[in-house]
Image (tube, rainbow, N blue to C red; front, side):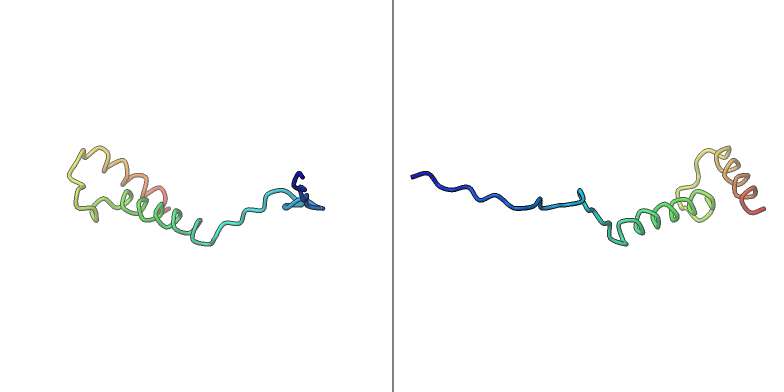
Length: 68
């Protein structure tokens, strides 16, 4: 005797897929981006900022433009 297959009377997700992000899923990447941006704009705070001086001058000019 074959087993009966029970089907659901309605679909499991009636309006499509409902995905909700948690607050930290957006806050943590934004916080990391801001922290890295601040390190780039103020290279004197970074300990490994002894590289190419033209890049430092470029970021200083960008910081001055943003400060206006």
